[in-house]
Amino acid sequence: MATLRAAGVNKDLDFADQIELTAKSHAYNLLANYDWHFLRGSTSTTSVDGTATYTLTGASNDCGLIINLKYANYLMPYVPQEEFDQRTEGLTSTQQPVGMWTISSYSSAGFPIIKFFGTPSESNKTIEYRYKKRIDEADPSALLPGHMMDIIRLKCLAEFFPYPDKSAQYRAEAENKINEALWAEREKHNLTTRGVISDDRMQGNTEANRLGNRGYRAYSTE
Image 1 (tube, rainbow, N blue to C red):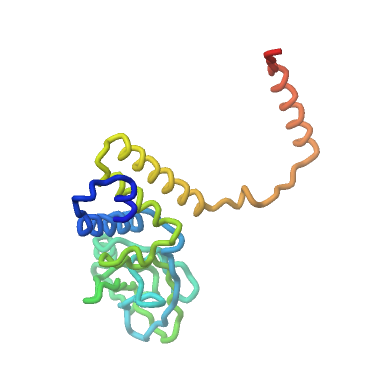
Image 2 (image 1 turned 120 degrees about the vertical axis):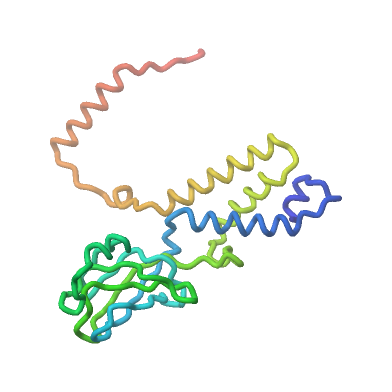
């Protein structure tokens, strides 16, 4: 609110409540609509002999969406629930080795409940999983890194600023900052790892650069 007023919003109007709700909405959408690395977690639990369903709560009661899952160090394929039902119809889970999993339902607290096919026949086998953390709609900014708070500020300015041209400017700046944050999170091993180039390849690159520079002309005003 202070930022908006400092930028010239009418001081006679109090948008505090609307701004707070809008900021929460923008923060939630920003976190939910992209695959941010800082929202990823991983942990494990163990199997129970004769039990096919498990509630996965995450490392700190923060599990929201399962990304992948391993059983006894083997990556298990995920199958959508409808296909899971079709593929297992008429089969007895206890007579099959663990070979796939699905989301069976969600607990009352909102944690995913997975179901294996077949049923583990041993206890203490490791169930390891990666997941996307749950986003608290009441306080989504709790998971937002400080450097991304400026995106929320710009989005709010774009929505509440009274001048269309400035609103468009703030909106564009917010999108640019989102793209910068996405770029910062991209895997860039090829940009940071120095590769080995053969002598022939190096010579070819040199010749290509030389040929490309033949068409270059420098111009002077003198």
